[in-house]
Structures are given as C-alpha cells and as structure tokens.
Image 1 (cartoon, rainbow, N blue to C red):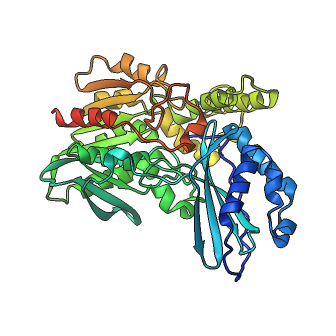
Image 2 (tube, one colour):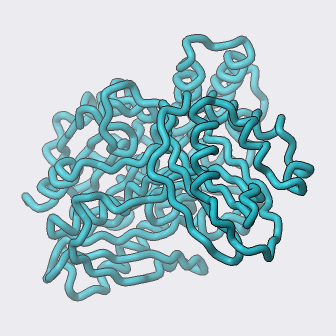
Image 3 (cartoon, rainbow, N blue to C red):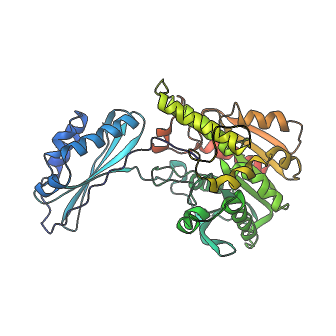
Amino acid sequence: MTMNRLIVICAFLLVSSSLAIGQDSNILTSEISQHLLDDKIGKVHKRFSPKTKKKFKKVFLVNVWNSIQKNNGKLVSIGKTNVSNTNGKSTITLPLTFENASLNLVVTANESNEIIGLVFTPLAYETPDWAKNKIFGKERLKVTTDTFKLPGELMVPENCNQCPVVILVHGSGPSDRNEGSSMSPNRLFQDLAYGFALNGIATLRYDKRTHVYQKQLTNVDSFTLYEETIDDAVSAVRLSRSYDFLDTSRIYVLGHSLGAYASPLIAKEDPNIKGIIMLAGPYRPLYEIIPEQYEYILGLDGQITKKEQKLITMMEEEVKFINEQTSEATKLKALGSDKLLPYFRQMRDYNPTNTINDLNCRVLITQGDRDYQVQYTTEYQQYQSTLTSNPNVDFKLIPGVNHQLIWGESPSIPSEYYKLGHPDLKVITELSNWILEK
C-alpha cells in the first residue's frame, strides 16, 4: 500500500516538573480551543513556559500548524476535551476535526498553566458500535515459519463448534495483525475479525514478518513475495488445523491488497484450502500501479508540477527497466533500490489469472468502486474479463467504499485513512454469506 502526504507528526519534548497541578486547566483549554478556531496558533505559543519557548520557537509551531492544515484542510471543529492529572502535570486532549482528517492535540501543562509539552497524534481506534458488548473468544498464538515467530490472535464466535476459519493476509508494507498503521485510527483486520465472529466465522490474524523483523530484514540481499507474505500465510493455514473446534475442511484465506494478489499462490501451496477472498487486490504487479497512484495523489490539487511530473516519468521509466524494456533508467531509484529487482521481477513473471484457473478452490474477487489505490476500472474489470468463464470464481463490486471498505460519497483521498471509520457490517455479512453458502 502506498500513501503520501502523510499527516505531519510533531512532538515537543516534555520538560520535567515536580510542581503541583494547577486549578485552571479548563481556562487554558478554552483559550487554546479559541486560538485554534481563530487560526491564531501563535497565541498558543505565548502560553509556553519560558524554558519551552527557548527550545521551540514560535515560527516552528506556526509552520507545523500550517503544514497540518495544508495536508488535511482547515480546522472545522473541536470535540469534547479531556483533562487528566498525573505525575504532577495536567494533560489536556483536544479532538480536532479538519476538512479531510481528524487528529488529537495533546497538551501538557504545569501548575502555573504554562504549556510544557504539545503533540499532534492520530485518533485512537474504537470498537465499531455493532461489535460493542458482544462476546468473542480470543486466543493468543504464534505463526512460525523456520526461525520466524509472528505473534497473532485467533478470534472465534460465541459457542464456536466446528465453525469455519478465515486467515487474514496483509497488504504491502510492515503491517501488524490489524492491517493498521501507527498514523491511522483504523484497523481493517480487527473490524473484519469482529464482523466475521458475529456471523459465526473464526479468524486468525498475525503480525507481518516485515513488521516483527523489520530491522533484521533491512539488509537481506533479496526478498520475494514468498518471504514477505506467502510462506507465513501457509504456516498460518497449517496452524489453524491444530484447533479441534474449527472446521478444518472450511479454511479460507482473505488477502487484502497485495495479500489478495498473493492469495492464489497461497492456495496453490496448500490445495486443501476451501477458498480465497481477494479483497481490493491488483491484477497487475505492484510496481506498475505505483506510478498511477502517485499521479492520482499529486493531481488532487488540480495540477501536476514539472517536478511532480519528473517523478512520475522516472517511475514509468523504472517500470520499463524492471520489465527489461528499452528505458532511460539503468537502476531503481524512485521505486526503491536494485535489491527489489528479484521481488518485482517475480511479480512480472506471475499471472494471477493463470494461477486461479489451476486452482480447485472457490474464489471471490471483490473491492470497492471508490478505491483509488486499486482502481476497479483496471484491476477488477481485468479479472472479470479473464475469469468470467471460470465456474469457481465469483465477483462482488461494493459501491461507495474505499481501499479499507469505509464508505464515502466523494472520491477517495489519502487523508481519509486518518479519519476514524469502520466497514459497514452489511459488507462483512455479505462476505460471510459467501463463505457459509457452500
């Protein structure tokens, strides 16, 4: 998954203080709120303690604030604030809603109501309303492949007795078991686990190898889709067969994004898998889609500058280089380094349609029509045109949802990922019904 123009995170170091907590935190909260709504962040700087003012100049705070609004739109409103007192300090949390995203502003003050710390953070994940006060079974586990041990969780519905199980397989990047990001409040896989459990289906999800062993894998000479995703997913399928309360004849693999692209190869490695769900998966190799993603994002402001076009052109030339076509590029730069050549060229030589046609399991290809990362007009429709005659393959285009299955009316934009949202339970129920119907 490629994301750009991420929300700027700015953290001010907290200054140690043994002073008692002041009594006027509400006044400080009110003042900060009004200054932000008036777009006068400089006045917030006046409330910094003398020592903090020396460390962090007013111009720095103003630049951070302007950058946040540039990426996320103007501040629209401030939600219900929270004030807590711990360790001799007061902490004020202000939920900020911008035009295109939401953030928390966390302010730390001493007893004199001087600001000694300030940080912008993403909103925290919240359990969807439809999953609150429900009973789920949870068990910690480890998916093991050779020397790699990946922490994870099995979630089962209440009174699970020979229920089917879905293995959740991540997209690209070092994702945790929830297919989440430290920059976003959303957790697609956790929501899917809740939703499947409500429909009588267990899920097994785990932290990705590149998340758990990120430092160790930095200097490997070569890396392919097998080491990144496939081998561990096959291990997760094998692990799911060790639970006697699961129906091991009904093991499904749901791959998201790059995981969807890889899921036919996972099923090829384990022919006893009952079916695969390819959620928001590309048809073409990842490296061919990245330039299109950049062009879409960079064009959201209505124009592409010469510098931005140069970057897009560089990527397009590197795509040709990977495909061993005539190209101005002689190495990878915009798309990474030459260490990625084996990874990309494995994708070049992989045709998901051919692999699907060789499988005996069920296949569901599905995505939202508002997904800009994997656009249905190219990827989904290509699957349709090449697999229509395969009786094992079903298709489901979901109206109005983006790459994370979150509904919206306007075209999808990157900042959507930083707004709190959840898939509609009806969407997960449709996926569940497909699993349960055969």
